[in-house]
Length: 150
Image 1 (cartoon, rainbow, N blue to C red):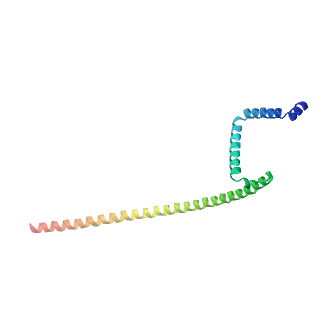
Image 2 (cartoon, helix red, strand yellow; image 1 turned 135 degrees about the vertical axis):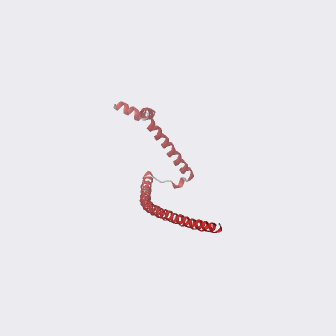
Image 3 (cartoon, rainbow, N blue to C red; image 1 turned 180 degrees about the vertical axis):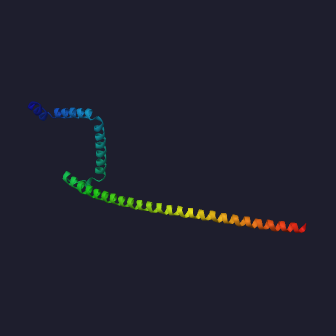
């Protein structure tokens, strides 16, 4: 085992070949996961290259600086996300309250319409009775007028 390690450390091409074979084994074992990981790695490298060529002076000096910047920025993002979550919860609560108020308003409106319909039907019935009485009065007067002519 020590001979293999010493050969790999002396001959870099052998170490690269062993690493490549290990990667192929992992690739075949975790094929779909590796495809996704490689795709994400390619995207990260492309974005990093784009920003490096666009703004080469703005890159961090060391990885420690980059990691600390990522930690602080991600903390800010998490805080903003929590604020947005809280505002969303508040808006949902207000929406529920508005829904309940609207529901009560609609129910009271239905009751008022039902009362109006009842009053309207009562009014129509009264008008029908009055019209019938008026028609009867005119018929009796017309009948009296005709009988007097004869």
